[in-house]
Image (cartoon, rainbow, N blue to C red; front, side, top):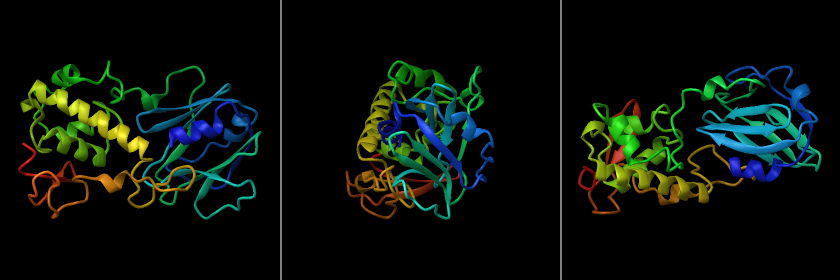
Length: 262
């Protein structure tokens, strides 16, 4: 989503902003159009699961929640039931934020102070200087919680959701219920590499479309066609043929192979 938005918005001037339906997880601020109109987009960045539209005025922060999408539409687009915000740029590009379940939100970041929502986030998993085996050794020391729960903790490492945690742990051969403190350093080296590989492959594939997610061009991602374990409970393991099992970890479903993952 970030890559798609950056290609469409970088260097463009936001000519018009229309709040279509203000009610999301948090109500869209009334001043948002007046602040963003006339602003030039410097870049679209990402921090954890937040999108950051950087402009020469303020930064627009966007969280997609469960069903939010930014859609590239034609300039004559007629507002749909779940459209909440529309942006038009100086080159005729039109983007609409659509969110059926309204768990996402958009808001302006403070001009001269750090963003409160980003303050307590852990390192990015694609940053080798911050997320590596040495870091996990320090974090996992004395932590008896399941390794999968900690891998999904945004204060420990950001952006690794249920799908990608399950897939990375399978590739690393680590049981998702294993106490984090018992995972040896050499296995953490492997886990870090697997997390990075899974995320990079998923980004290249345009993400995973299970129900609602779509890319900015409306197309589905296709990483779901390569899942080794996620949503495959009861099916044979692709590595050994053993029937994959389902567990609940931290209130989330987790599929794993009892033979390949220890």
